[in-house]
Image (tube, rainbow, N blue to C red; front, side, top):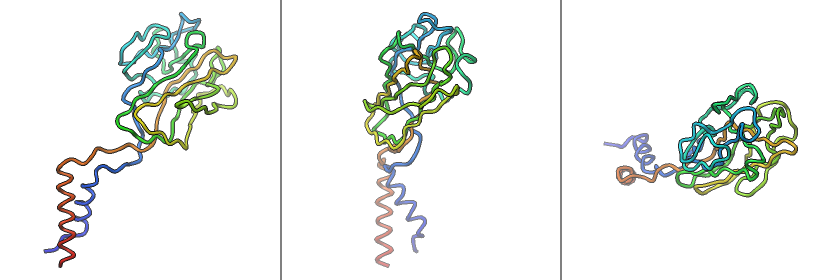
Length: 219
């Protein structure tokens, strides 16, 4: 009896479950200062009201820790802030004002140590009401330029060619003078997610595959 090549390949592949594969990389949580609103001279409230961690989601600039919210919910704004915001703070954007949050940085946490090659930030670049995309984005302390001009749209700032590893990364924003507001609806990460280490059954299958290979050679 012979071992068919495709069966052998399946056995060998099962043993290498620890390989990597290209995929979106989802954070497990992020820490941030809550968005601002009416208390910070806004027209409405731009809080991260769906945030699942610790902290007041209805207080301007409050520290939010250990959860997920609007910035990772998959909802990307398609209209400018003044058409989608409200007093309840349930619009798609989280908006920060320079006077309330002068040092604007968000710390993202990940399982394991994925390789992150690209980060995309979806920002309001309307120029209306003092809202503009950030002048610069910092990633773990390295500065990258934001959009060159204000175009009145919802813009995506994609920073590619990265090679970030580790289980936490900090993204910061520099306000674009003289605009005191930054509004962001989503932040996404792409790269290589590390798959789980082989379980005992996978190792057994790997051994079986190697044994089958030896049997074929002997025959």
